Image (cartoon, rainbow, N blue to C red; front, side):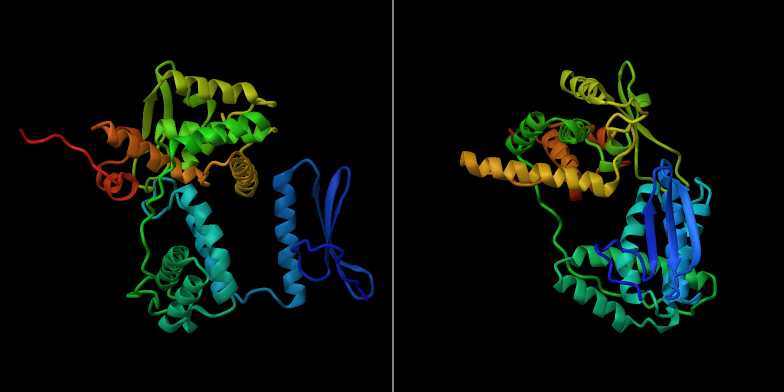
Length: 365
């Protein structure tokens, strides 16, 4: 009889992992102590380890009877993402890579609820139940995005002839209030100061936040910013969000003393020289979970220090830098903000990113 795991590792029943000096091994142990299968990968190849782990989990689920049926929603979701990744980059149907990354994360909640069901079994009442449950859990906006993703996946299934109607069509989404969060300059400066005190990854991330503010950039545009973006005139940044049919666009943010100092400092902090400007100690891109963990720790340190010093401090995220930048550009009367954001017009800028509470103007005469 197999004993209870000493610590949860997220793997199925009877599947085990051993981290060796040269290789990482996964195996499924049968009741008689023999192994049903063994899968290994070199210990210095993280991609191979991740692939081996996924393969081992899939085989273990099949042996445990937990594998999703071929006509289940879970399998349809899997086929949808395989289809998206197989599309050519200039295909109008293909989503941006950053969007697919977010969608794959969002699909985990969908699989928990709908994964074992057949697509044809999902009715509008189930969709409304999901929206209500997620709203009650404090995530109404996230629920809307997840159902929008489910709608796209079911429409893909309908296109393949796997269902006649899309139950998400005509659904009324959860009412939400657009974010009005504006990061005060004193909070940004305070976080920068705390990051300098602690150094290392805390400072690298803080510099990335400051660069996002200075360049009015999306989170992914900064997290994946490469050394090649650095030119004599300024930073040449690929616009991160576009449809597959649209030509790749870039924006040039000319150097200011603060921007040049920020980028040079980030590069000087690198222990291992990689292609990215804001890289981890191995010269690679931070994982989303690693990035979030480090930043949340820094925010916690800021809150503790602020309490000790008797001042206020409000947490903020990388996505908040773009609205702050747009708001400050608007406040000083800039008229070419679309050149900084990469948008084709100002509709999204005015609707989403301009967080001014008071808008100022001169008298007519």
